Length: 106
Image (tube, rainbow, N blue to C red; front, side, top):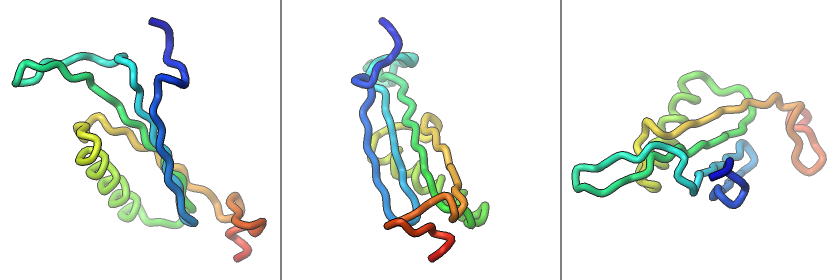
C-alpha cells in the first residue's frame, strides 16, 4: 500500500466572515487496529481540523473554541477526543479581505 492520495481523504469545510474550518479524515487504514470489548475491530482515526480566524481572541476564548469543536466532532463522528487534532491559525486583519476590503480597513 502506497502513501495516501487525494481519494483517500474525506473533506468538509465551513466558513463565515470571522473564521473558516476545514477537516480531513483518512479513509484508508494507516493507524493501529484495536479490539473493542465487543470483539469488533475499530480503526483508530485521526480527524484533523484546521481553523483560520482573525487574531484578537483571548486564550480562554481559544480554549473554549477548541473544547467545543473537539466535543462536537467526538459526538457526531464517533471519534475519541484524544484522537482529534486541531490547528488554530490566527490572521492579522490586514491579511484578510472580504469584497476587496481588508478587515483592518472596515
